[in-house]
Length: 241
Ligand code: ADP
Ligand code: MG
View (cartoon, rainbow, N blue to C red):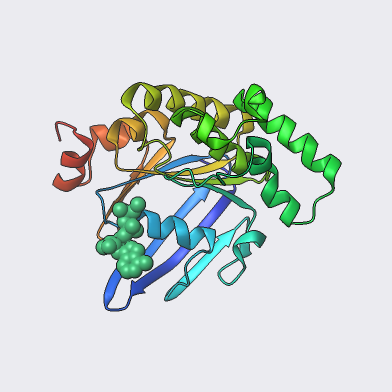
């Protein structure tokens, strides 16, 4: 995949005390790319995503977003939106309140906030839900609102950390299609963490297979499935090898 780089990760290492979680990891992600980080539980996917988001102090290395070194930038200055596995909506606020909260905190003008909330609600088809509280929503609706909170930021890069793993299989399949459509519509850079091979194979432009804090293989779903780099990758992706 050609194109300009959206995110460059150079020699990234991170330890929690004695535990080395990421080790000299390099990864380039292109503008507009849907990149899936796939790997078993505990391999460092969330840690890597949190490093890109600026939620963890790294031990060594550098992170560039749109060519700018953001290694020591605050999360809010990195131009990214993040969707977590747990919906983490504010229970006391309406959907509208949840969508606008971050923008209000950032001091954005009311009219601009209203426009952005309307745009996001329209894209995600949650307009009828704006006055409801999270407790009055289904799991799928809540996760749509959680995506909406990233959407209203209108940034170039979205990070998803297993956003569908708390949902049942049917909803998971539906929302997978919606996330794909969202990407086709917005055409922004998405980094999507999952341990689910099917999600990875259906969503990704490219998949990075992670193991033990390193990238084992980075390629298109087709290439990884048909030409896995090693036995581990073959086993994990479920390819005949
Ligand atoms: P994944 O998202 O791939 O399941 P994580 O990035 O959450 O993996 O975790 C990678 C490793 O780091 C695991 O061994 C986990 O127990 C450990 N870990 C994650 N967060 C912390 C933390 N805040 N403090 C200590 N260890 C952590
Ligand atoms: Mg995780």
